[in-house]
Amino acid sequence: MSSLFPALADDPSDRVALRFGPRSLTYARLAAAAGGVGARLRDRGAGRVAVWATPSLETAVAVVGVLHAGAAAVPLNPKSGEKELAHILSDSAPALVLAAPGDELPGALGGLERIDVDALGSEGPGPVTASAPAPVDDEAPALVVYTSGTTGPPKGAVIPRRAVATTLDALADAWRWTGDDVLVHGLPLFHVHGLVLGILGPLRRGGSVRHLGRFSTEGVARELNSGATMLFGVPTMYHRIAEALPEEPELVKALAGARLLVSGSAALPVHDHERIAAATGRRVIERYGMTETLMNTAARADGEARPGTVGVPLPGVELRLVEEDGSLVTALDGESVGEIQVRGPNLFTEYLNRPDATAAAFTADGWFRTGDVAVRDPDGQVRIVGRKATDLIKSGGYKIGAGEIENALLEHPGVREAAVTGEPDADLGERIVAWVVPVDPQAPPGTAELADHVARRLAPHKRPRVVRHLDALPRNDMGKIMKRALPS
Image 1 (cartoon, helix red, strand yellow):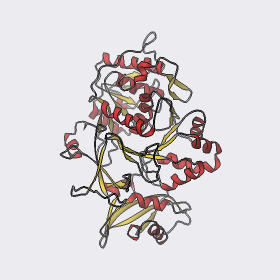
Image 2 (spheres, one colour):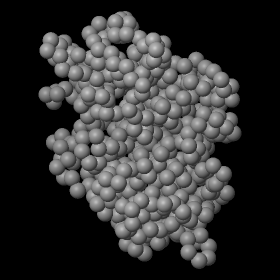
Image 3 (cartoon, one colour):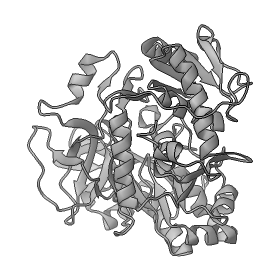
Image 4 (cartoon, one colour):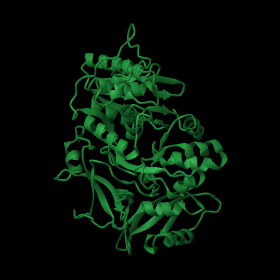
């Protein structure tokens, strides 16, 4: 644990490390609590440990305790269905499960030994003092995080300690992240974004995190106006912030005073970027990562925060764009589309129990195939245009990314939400389909109006040929649009 979180070994002060609502732990108390958990896990020889990952102090203590023991944490989404949960438990075979006292666990976990996590650091009789972490190799697994499973059962990405450390240190370089920073967020703790960046990130820097428990614009305003310096969120959260700014002057003040506003997990629409910048004078920056790669790129704190871009590759990360035939896309023209492939110390080691899937995910020379498609601007900044499987549309001889069309649609005053897909077309190969949630359902913008709107902003071949209106777009826990769930 000391190698990942030096402050837990070196900081005996009363500095707050974690705060969830009214409950908090100093670095000294966190070291004791996590050390107590770690000692119990070592006594049982645990290799993989399930963590019932509610947005709570206990989850943070549990994960740090697992790392203290030299084991690998398997964070479980409390909203997982029975079938998905049973698959994850069968696949990862954890030795036991850690949970907060009083949490009711589903029947699928009934066969596992349970340890209740005492976040106050008093595991067992008498006080617990901090113990030394288990010596662990950098390549040892730190986490097994399950992917969303859009094309089959979720796969467990084995993330080594090396990847956690290098990603967090690279972000510290890009964002000038130090122990003086206080991070606020309301992200779930079973994903890389909320857990690795949002909890382990501040602890590695020796800083502090204030978790909102449940996201609210009032909570963001309160924490940023009382000493927090950074905000992490997903586009849905920043959209709610943009909507609330005209009516919440305290929120305007809070964002204007923040050192860093970061959005991730999906593309932040340009429209919301501009509304936040206009109201606060501050721009949100974006970064790009995946479960399997942790973070690949980021806009730098000392660079340009350009809407629609996710910055440049982080230190130590190699990134290239590749055509379908394997040839490299070398043009920095903001138009030439290719699949992103990455290589570096930030990568996972394998999909658990899936050597076939692991082999298929990498090229012969070690590049990971992300499945994301992007372009690069003349200065090297990366712009994601979507997923290769669902967002790369081949129409009339052009390769078109759905993301830029979605951003253009969101600039129309009659569009509240938008998603873009392709469907077979005898003439074009694929035609562009826009799925739109209108601002006024009684007077939705029509196909011709939206096609002209997009053609003026982008190019005529990027205009939607079909517009379908919905009451809402299907989204997952992180606010990502699930295009495979759109009506057929």
